[in-house]
Length: 172
Figure 1: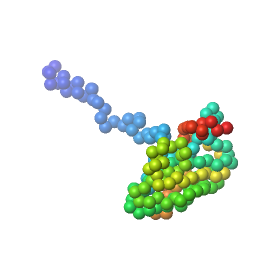
Figure 2: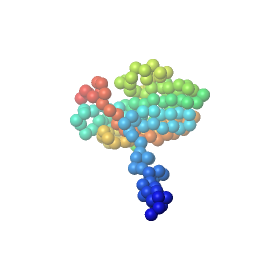
Figure 3: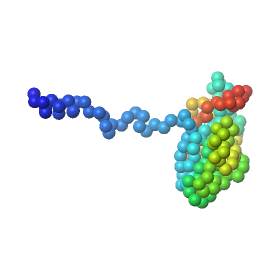
């Protein structure tokens, strides 16, 4: 066998797999919450706030109200407004505070345990709650929530349950 033929055979059988689809190529981690974009609005690190006990199978019971944690970033030049939030797992949702996101600015939603620098970068903090849950909310699962903005439109996100932190981990 010639050296050239041997090298050709070696190259053919030892391919690197370039171009092959890997098992993790299309997976997205929920570790840091949901991130997505609609129009000029980016939703970052969105999750359902952890409010249960670490050893419990349920973070919220049916009938309770769940807080959301996330950041809303307007990457455009003109302001937009979060006008509604809805989810099939809740009877309704409530937005408290001024939900206007100025162009090029950030509005923090919930997340009292956020790092101080996240709050200092935000124009303000508002509250968004899912009211009247129609099923228990459990850690490890994702739940659909739709955010509707005046200009950008509607974005449906599958939100994970956040990690227990600070005083939230000690609630009873």
